[in-house]
Length: 281
Image (cartoon, rainbow, N blue to C red; front, top):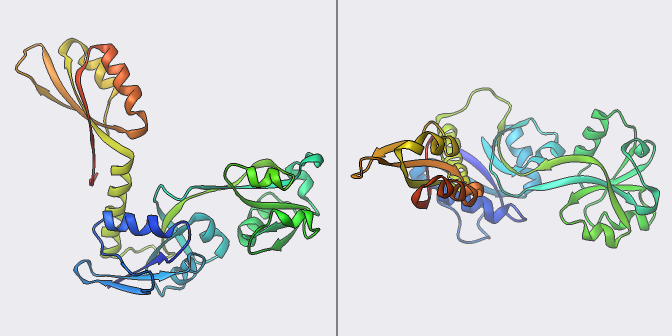
């Protein structure tokens, strides 16, 4: 039976359960449950602290898990990313006192406070910068004012919290993170895990794409297909009207309204958008 780790709390927990449900797996209804067996799919789900998931998977105790890319790197575990899940996005940045106008080069020799020491140490090593990394469990924005650190490395969304603490972002992002599916470093993948990957990939794709249907004069069909090429090729069907055809193609959800405007200007009519609930591509 395939054993999968799922975040038991935090920003990734609810979204992880939702994507697994959409992929056809049972999930717990009581947040106090630590284990759930989905016998129909041959899977056991273990609900663990997000920071511990990479350790369990890397040790081989569990075959797969959902965690953050940041947590995987920070753990140093012998595990690898096999699928990005397109939720839980976050960006890690350096920040320091506004008045100092810092750059990456100025980090050398300074104290860097962070809740992700493994991630930051690896990044600094990649940049060949020597600094003292100070581990804190939270509220790292206060560390500079309290004299514990000179700069910080933390998750940044709007930047409002940093500005309130008198800090400003500097340098390129340390990491752009999101929820990911991980497994051990073994090159072999069990059949049950392949099924899990295909199901989750199907959900991710279904969330990102929609079906776009429209009618178009035959004279404009090549231009229309250039606008909506689909994944492989658009489906073109004849209409009762001899000089018109119906076209169906998958398009990115985020581009839908722009594509509809372009098709309308080209002469397309009867433009319809349909959600995709699941797919295999």
